[in-house]
Structure formats: structure tokens, C-alpha cells
Image 1 (cartoon, one colour):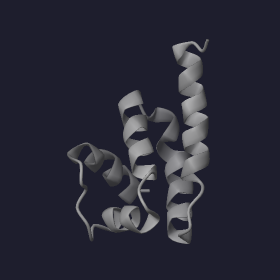
Image 2: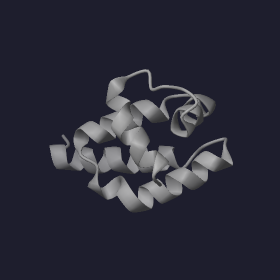
Image 3: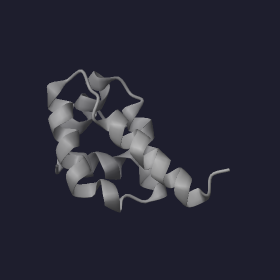
Length: 86
């Protein structure tokens, strides 16, 4: 019986943990900065997109962030831009 607010806190904690676990050092560094700068201001739809991005293989995600690959889903563009700026 979790209240919606409790669930959001749990999801944020899980996403924060997942975002800090990458095989690529470059992604670890990037996500550390991103979490510090933007994570607390993300809304529910952005958190859902972040969860989708974190489900990708590290190399696929890195290539999208570097601009070598286009986002497969247009909803990802805004968050990928935030990541690029981190």
C-alpha cells in the first residue's frame, strides 16, 4: 500500500542507483553530473524516459548521447539533450 508520493520516492531511488551503474566510465561520469544537476527537477514523464534510456545497452546509450546515433523514440530527445549538456 504505497501512496503515489511514496512510489515516486522509491522510483527515484531505484533510478538514481541504476543511473550510477555503467560499464563505461564515460557514462558514469556523465550520469554523476546529470544526477547532481537535474535529477531532483525531473517530472514523472522525464523519469519514465530516463528509465527507458537506462534499459538500453551502454554503447547504444553512449552513441545517442554523443550524437552518433539518433534516438529511436522522439520522446527521448529532450532528456538526451540534458545529458549532453551535463
